[in-house]
Image (tube, rainbow, N blue to C red; front, side, top):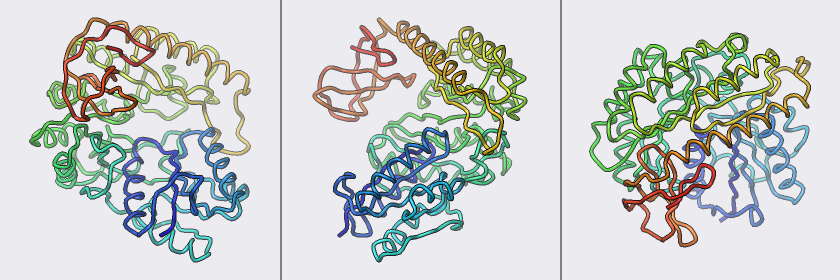
Length: 415
């Protein structure tokens, strides 16, 4: 039995693949351990940002310098193989379709080989049968690849065009998860909203099938490109009224300057997003909206950035994730780093303000939450709008309990 450490730098859509990989490592007779005790360190990666790439390389260098065998797997090796190997020459590398071959890869590494493995045939990773990081939360893949060609994004290069999985396989996977204690179903993909564009289906049509499944669970949607909702938003709105749906939407808006959105090859406008937000706010009492925003795109002038800030102050999402632009080409002309940092810091301050304004609205709310995690004598529950609520007592995971929100700490609601 060999000792294997798995370090994850992946986006939400890749979590089920990491879970499957860890399950297969154990099934191959190995033990999952922390990094210090490991003989082999597996670093699962995505290409979301330059900072993730730097962290991935640093961890790989640290493990390699201490005499451990290192495998870098996922989107980063697909795109930056030469750069990764120039930093960690002894590392093995594998691509995004090789997660399910992890047993074979580790076997070769333990035999002394440096493995290079890419272009395994895509395999639909649905149907259940893998161990979950949190037994109560099941990440269910509904598609792979992307149907868009955004100028700043490496997703389509690394993962290919959109492939939507058959609804019956997704439904079967969810039934399996619910029968095995899952209370929260997270539908994931590189763009969940685009589900079915390659097969004459839509996300709402899939949801209607999912929502007929019997059991006590709620469904959360992973991130969505607003362009994917332009032709089905009202239909999705109808699905979101179902009691098994979390009142939550994660929109990757990237910018609120139409000029920058055009340069990014995003197929929607700031006005489209504002209309979606207005419909959500007017249709629901308590709906959580999370937005992804990017700063530092080469087309982003000062006035474009100010448009984005003004937009966020107007529509008031409950929170934002802030990313900085990563150059696509080595010789690409970019905005000065000091200016990008300045914009990034300004949006982080705005994020804090938005979260505080959102959390204040929940003070005095009372209602039901489901406990999804227990630690240090306290419990973490989630309410219908996917807001985390800290309960200052230990409860059984999966328990439903009524609480009253009395305070908050940033985005965490407190009882």
